[in-house]
Amino acid sequence: MEGLRPTVCSLFNSAYDADFRLTYKDEDDDLVTLVDDEDLRDVVRQGLDPVKITVHLKSDQSS
Image 1 (cartoon, rainbow, N blue to C red):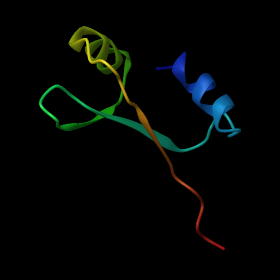
Image 2: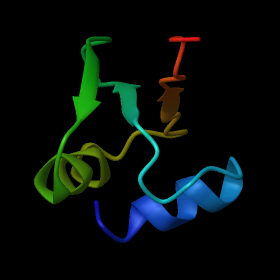
Image 3: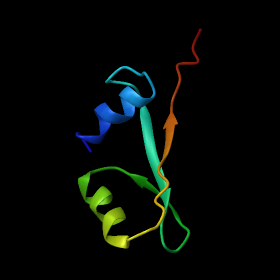
């Protein structure tokens, strides 16, 4: 996931330490949170077509 973080941050113009989580729906239609590289490999092994990974960017709401 360390290789994916810079790409996500770049696409969303966010700081590298931005607080976000990545989710996708698996072959059983369960919502799964990507936590580590093994989760990412599992997505690839499932052969989902297409794979839709959703980025949930947590914003600082304390003002």
